[in-house]
Length: 115
Image (cartoon, rainbow, N blue to C red; front, side, top):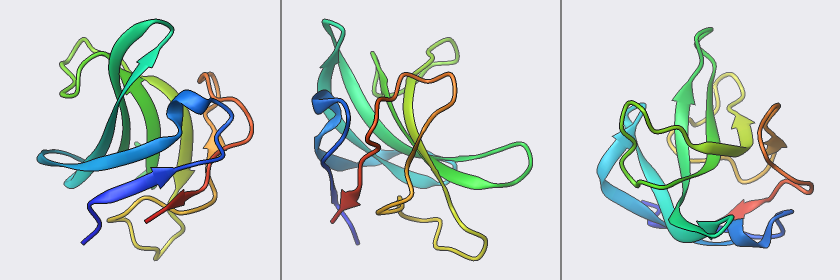
């Protein structure tokens, strides 16, 4: 079981760091990973979380939000996304293949992850 994921080499140094597994909150049926951090002067959380798109494709996002547990009105700022290849393991974020989110606020280079 992976309890810590390290993001490094990212275009925004704020996003680099160690993300802990959140044991009490899931998105899309799997645990999220989070790190306390500031974005544009505001305190909040950087998060790595899985999604399922309307077309059924699964992937992972790296984002920031003011709350760890997002409410219905809370929208995260999206930076990077990685789509899981067909037949790939969807239970953990991908170590590579991250891309800037279109209309997001990511900055090159997109980070690799390790654990």
